[in-house]
Length: 364
Image 1 (tube, rainbow, N blue to C red):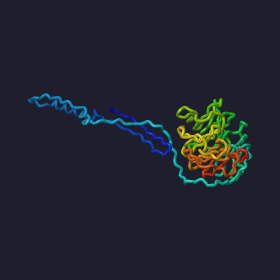
Image 2 (spheres, rainbow, N blue to C red):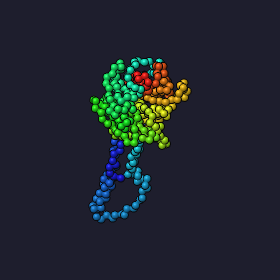
Image 3 (cartoon, helix red, strand yellow):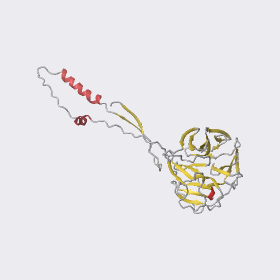
Image 4 (tube, one colour):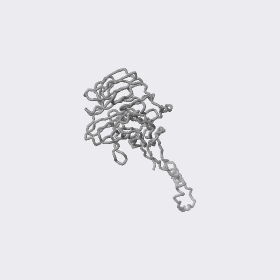
């Protein structure tokens, strides 16, 4: 049909490996104006013959010779409709410009920091030289990597924070289960990000895009989910697999969370004895429940979880006094169990792939 066919926008197709896609371009097309370009000139030519026909000449009535449809199409041509396909829109991660870093054959202890926390649970990197730490006490402490205390933040509710994380601008964020609230602290000013209804916040992390991922459980402790916030706005909820089954155990136990470099979302579901990994769209990729052949005596119960520059996943196995190292697809690579670890709990990795480990009992 004549007229403007409008604009169409095409998005990149999702791939599990998440390669960057070319920028989408708008495609605009216009159907040829058949009436203006062909029919009207033919009609005017016919009128000219009719009105200026010379006198004295006998006109012979023209005969009609029907044309087959296929022949007509070959004369006029045809317009093929624009083909469009609606595809799921998924952003892909930029590949980091880093060299391949191999695991050390024998991990070594670089430094030990005495924090003074009762039952040290959480650690996160602020800068290359500073870390935030928290435990079962109503304060959060910042240390430099030499172990010198830099700053202390007191929790207003008097309860201890369930977890800690840091935004790219240096703002500290933590959930407070007693008030059902996630708080952000910047320049000594505390503000609410979100206050939950019917749910309690558990653990959290900040993504590479600046969003906030929060694990939470229902008031009756029968459901758990991951919610992604952009500022204070809910952007995404991850709770069920494609068969409608819960991805995470319904309880109030720790579910440490981190985003991998390939944008996978990794949750250490402690009481389920599994590391649950979904892609950025919330689709289940795999569950890791321990190596096929384990040399450890106690069941796998993961707590802290983090990733390194090579997208390897590290998770703390406190009861077995070790850390599991996996590749990005959930294949077991090795244990870290030679550093006299007692009860490894919270974990984080800095930009140089140095691993910080919380010792739950020894407070360091």
